[in-house]
Length: 246
Length: 90
Image (cartoon, rainbow over all chains, first blue to last red; front, side):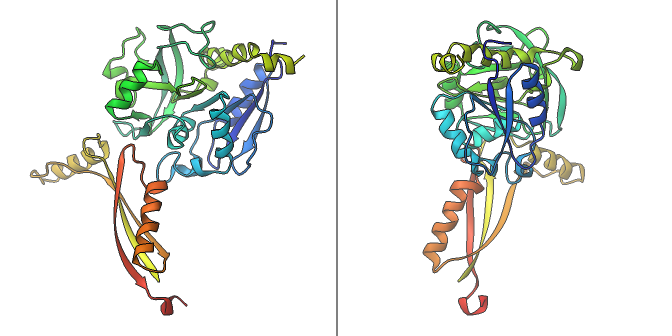
């Protein structure tokens, strides 16, 4: 049993979501209790953390995430995030968080127009709880996770990019295996090679890579676990949670 | 009255448009060597009912602001015209 045995994860499912089962599977490996929440629901229940998984919510029509952000559950996700609750949006989930205004910027069509499905090196820029705990990752660490997207080119205007950088909110950058953020190592043309950002409070993480697909050695790597275990570590330190679990 | 709004969603100036660049390359390959640039976008034809022109304008503006365009990277403009009078809708 881990310290937070039974950590309760709510995994939101929109029509077209495809990564929820992977998150449920990994949650099971970690001894967590995870359940899916259909997008038409309005309540996240007693979740400790919320996942917006990858996929093609509402067919990605109009723009990725554009319709999903108005799904009924998103009001609860917004309130949960604004109350400091940990929210992670991976791939399509990142796109939805941006459309919902929980994170700045937008994800646009990859610069080469191809759907890119590959393992990708990433450099950790900042260890910020709850998703990048200093006991799991350190700035400068190189981690490797799969990407799988056609629209992952991070865009924001220069002022917003500067603000993100100044606030230490760019937490993951695309690099090559040596940690160099060269144009060749950038899989989609993201500005400043941005692969993942957090909100001001650090509790909302959006990233294009898939941590849930890098959580077992037999599928190619376990660096994704460092992100998910970070949540476990963070939650253990929350007095209210510790009390509830006695 | 029934209205038709033709909404043009455009990428903001200066934002990279790989789709447009690819289309421009296609045109140039076809011999249209005078093509400088293509910018891609969307055309959305929205029909709806509203009492008068002012109400119709306000409705379209709201649709664009709330959903049809993402102000981070897009702008929207539209042409609005009467599609059918009340008597014809019934």
